Each structure stands twice: as structure tokens, then as C-alpha cells.
Length: 112
Length: 111
Image (cartoon, rainbow over all chains, first blue to last red; front, side, top):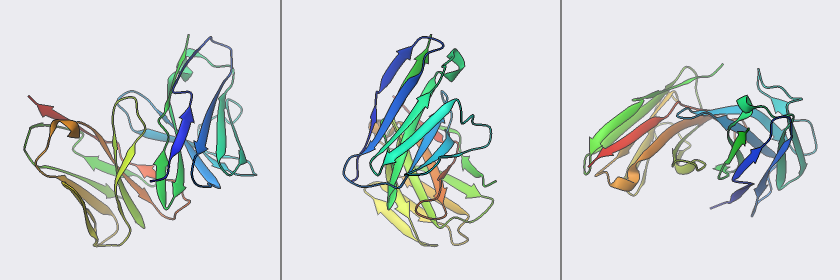
């Protein structure tokens, strides 16, 4: 099946710094990718829809200036958590669709 | 907005038992999806359903797309230890539309 690769799988950063997470569709092109956040023992919460060549669409309550999304090519979307704080610590997952949604491996972000 | 109600929230079963979980929605979907998530990993697609009434199997897994388009179930037969994990139902209107997830069913297998 289609492969979506997410990098890094784990990252620890200091409070106040920014972190970039990459999501790549390895063997197909994706005009749309999705970014999710998942808290422990909870479901996936959609944060935003990443649109190639245009602005991302953010879900209600998600700060677009906090979570910057760039979808510069048909195979790459990036999520940048700016000025990270401990409450931003979470599991972030991306997905891309080729007939159905395929997910990346997830990124565990820990802000200390 | 659209919501998915997934039940049960968790299950504790003996190895070899059959498992059944379901999802209901307040509105229709054109695609129903079932995913499994292992700890620290992204969800992996198990079964995709595209037509109302469709019954699809994948090994020991069987899922059905409800005739009203507002519900779906997933059955696992003869459970084995590697079935442990969280199972999510998900609904989608169109291929590039966002996917709405249920809250998950956490499956535990007792030794």
C-alpha cells in the first residue's frame, strides 16, 4: 500500500523554541494532507487540512500562528510548532489520501 | 458538526474469543474506515467500506457498512494476542474530505 513517512519520530525541545515535523507521501502525490494531534488514551483530533499551494484550513480552536503548516509540494507537508510550551507536548500524526487515508508513524513531541 | 459514537470504549476478552465493536453517526458518510493503532504508532487501515450494505472481510476481520450509511461494525474472530490495540472507526464524505474518527475501542486480551 501507499506509504506516508513522518519525521522525526521523537523530538524533545526546550520551551520557547520551534519544532518542525515533516510528512512525506513516498510513492504517490497528495494535494491534501491532514494533521492530527492525539493525547494519551484519546482519539485523533484533526488540527488542520494542508492544501498544496494554498493556505491550510484550521479546525476551530487551533491557533494557526502557533501551528504553522506549509505544503510546498505534492509530496511534502510540514507542521511547525512555534514557541513551544509544555502543554504542546503530544503525539502528532499526519495523513495523506490515495483512495483512502494512510497515516505517518507519528511524532512524539516533548517540550521541557 | 459530525460525530461518531464508537462502542464499547474498552473490552477485556480471552484469547480465542470473538470481538464485536460498532460505530454510529448523526449524519451519513460515503466511506467507512476501520483502523488499528498500536502504542506509539500511527493508525493502520484494516478495512475500507464504500457502499451501503457492503460486507467486507480481511482475514479474521469482517466489517459492514450500514444500509442507512450512519453505522458500521467490525468483528474479529478467534482473537489472538497481536489483536491487542486501539481500534478506530472513521467516516469520510469524499476522498479528499477530512476524516471523522470515533473515540476508539481499546482491546485487551487476558492471559
